Length: 257
Image (tube, rainbow, N blue to C red; front, side, top):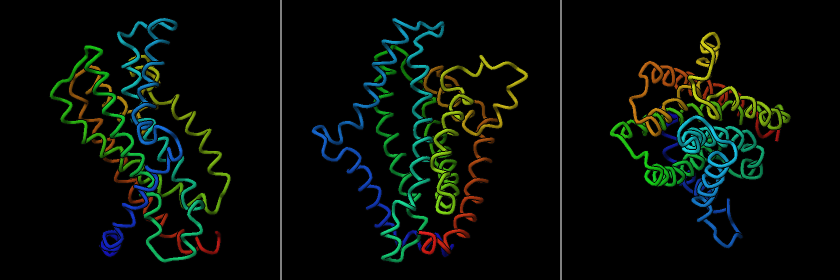
């Protein structure tokens, strides 16, 4: 409770770090913040051309099938990779003033989450123009997004703290994230996985998240509630473990930096 109270007291600093991240991401570019919408829109155009003309898939409107799963994955990957180097990147700030160090990885995840929210605007327009549309199950989407946020936050606590002591972790994570993506049904549907391998894929906490996004936005059906419990269990476990690891390792951040 004391930690939560301290975070609340430093909420303005947290908001400031998030704003700084969002503003400096496209600083100096002509279009500036508009790239937040243009990037996913251009990606969608590329997927539409490639998978409608060149690499045709049996999945109807495969570009939407891919896009709705890629959005949560990009948030997850950006949060993990961005937070892993966040403490080292903020070493000058850490050495100068006191503040709860855990604010740094939180700000990275929050900025990535805000970017995902902006990208969802493009997703919604894509669903309308593709003719897929919406169903009332879309009301469940914020629950999935919050659970994924907690999952990413817990892992960000762990990797941001470990990277201070093990600097190669940032580079190793790049490879791990790439492999992790192929082990998550982003580029393919869950139904394409052989039955004997499905238990392995279900261990992956990102599998039920991606499947839930696709169920709600592409198939317009109720996501599997048993998967929701899996996501919740992973999220709570990693938040607790991540917080404990971060609090233990942060005591010697100044010495290591």
